[in-house]
Image: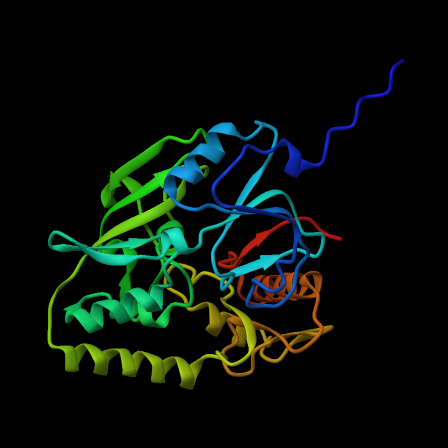
Length: 305
């Protein structure tokens, strides 16, 4: 029997692009946890058309994973096989589109909030308290301080894995608590939001209040991944974790935050396996103590070492 012919390195099988490829790209530098193995290949598309061309031309057996700024992401220690797509400079512009605000999916939520504040537009102040990108906000219906993405979203633009561009109204995305019905293979590229003229001083004050609240209640100076678990219906995840006696619980270099126990912290030298294992310890203890099974809010990707 003839031996199977080995495929050439992945990067040699990928289509030509105007953006940039890099092999064995470290992802621990990208994630807020500071852990995780490398991307087999990282692709930073130049713009939406470059992204679409890549998706059209890539081999069908090559998996694709999209990452933003890694704020609500846990990359496992073995890294991510296939191509990791990270939207960069071609996807961060924020500007007016008629009466609305258009933001690229790579734009930081906080930068969108600041741009609106400078323009005297109110309604998106809540984004100043969310450490992520607009693409992630669309995928997860991100929200904070009583407002969710679905409350301000007019429409979204995405490219599917065949390279087709879709523009859909907000209601078509089926946005609910930390969830979108958008097809899993869609890569969001832009969003259009509603905002209304407001008083710059009042908008700035609201954003200062949000920042002060985050400083007082969340371990934002630590290496963390944001809220770890979704709030079950009628419950607060942190209260369930507190009730189960998990505040301060550790596994290796991973710890449940003393300040806000729905946050996991890399205290220094933690592995992704320790962080994920600690999260599973918390889920088990909460289930045993309350009968409620917590769902992960943090996205976990990649393979174990």
